[in-house]
Amino acid sequence: MNHLIVVRIDKKDQFTYSDFASGEPANEVAVRKGDKVAWYVERDGKPVGYTVAFKSATPFAQKALNVQAGGLSPLTEVSGISKGVGMQYSVKLNSGLEDDPEIRIDDDPQFRGGESVRLSGAATSTPGTLVKATVGSPAKAGLGDWVLFQAAEDFTVTFAESPFSTGETTFASSGLKTASRLVSAKAGDFAYTAKFKSGKTAVGSLTIATAMVAGG
Image (cartoon, rainbow, N blue to C red; front, side):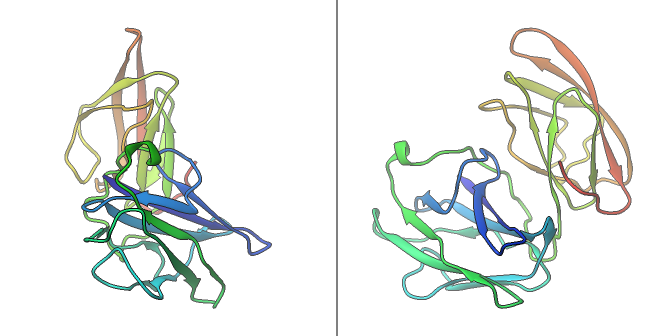
């Protein structure tokens, strides 16, 4: 399973952690060996440079991820650590502002919320905005953005031409959402049709801008 931890800092320097796919709090994240984790940090709605660092034990091969240019961190795989172990780490902005959340190794599926997030190709050079799109409504994204489709019931979305790095034209939801997709197509309008579990259909579009745009 892949996890994308979104870290937001407000004007009062308060840190908030959430799982991108589920929207659930993620100040304590449960993972298991073989899972992959990435971070995205923004302050006042804008990506900022940061470092994720473990001061003692770490579930990864390295103790620190430096994302000085901001955006998504590399997708990092959890290595062998005994289950039930909680490890505190720091999220430190380039400005020096710092916070200490926790990641936990636990094989109990009841402890783990959310859904898998597709993060193939995530790298420090990807400054993408996280865009949540409602199925059947117009949505806008920029090159390098990540798009998550969601609706009030499960659905299947089919594009005539894929705007995503995976090349997919058809994908289905899980838990009323899809895993996020990385936008890599040229600028333009990409129409799609959606078929809902109830049998209803809808037509929507994803407009790719030449420059980054703010996500919903």
